Image 1 (cartoon, rainbow, N blue to C red):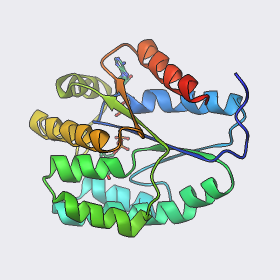
Image 2 (image 1 turned 60 degrees about the vertical axis):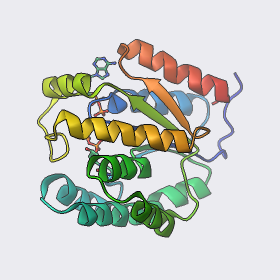
Image 3 (image 1 turned 90 degrees about the vertical axis):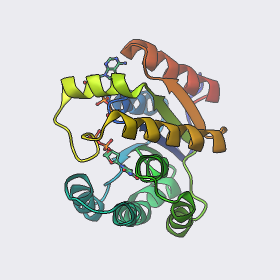
Image 4 (image 1 turned 120 degrees about the vertical axis):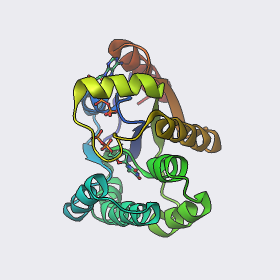
Length: 209
Ligand SMILES: Nc1ncnc2c1ncn2[C@@H]1O[C@H](COP(=O)(O)OP(=O)(O)O)[C@@H](O)[C@H]1O
Ligand SMILES: Cc1cn([C@H]2C[C@H](O)[C@@H](COP(=O)(O)OP(=O)(O)O)O2)c(=O)[nH]c1=O
């Protein structure tokens, strides 16, 4: 396996319902890419800049309607793109982002039932044609995700939602994946941690990453 050229800019996003296992694998993936010569930036949404992290606190803990929620999410994304993601890509870095715009389509669109055309307009305004080069979609049965979350942590405003909500979020991801099959790689997140890691490994091997 030849090393990744340090100047190869890549934007990789991690998606899935809460508790699907994203956080469990991001660090190891970063380490793998680093060992192959990439200069890796870890970041997340909502958040990733001081301003967007402040918005994250509001989004996760304050009550609001779905359009307000979407506007805050996209406002944070704009700041994040301008201050972190675009400069990193412009200097040849690999950006690993824990959630990006697909989460807006899945949560605000699928989960909250927002008009996807409105989300599409916000997407276009905020990011132009910028999209991740690869999106790892951790797909998991919402009932299993709920069990994992219950064992792991206290629930925020999204994590308190019921199984129907997460079933719609999952369907939102599935629709988004179907609309961009080249970009999305579905991971069977119901398998064990080593098996999920092996799937990620194979996906990257196939790309020569
Ligand atoms: N494949 C897996 N099998 C069983 N438990 C897992 C698996 N992956 C992650 N977990 C556990 O599930 C919980 C949620 O995982 P986490 O990585 O925080 O999910 P996310 O970041 O997608 O919300 C954690 O306690 C984690 O240890
Ligand atoms: C990026 C994004 C996240 N979210 C939600 C999904 C998650 O429930 C929540 C926070 O995501 P996350 O950082 O994955 O939470 P945690 O660290 O607790 O696992 O924000 C949206 O609703 N829309 C979005 O566009």
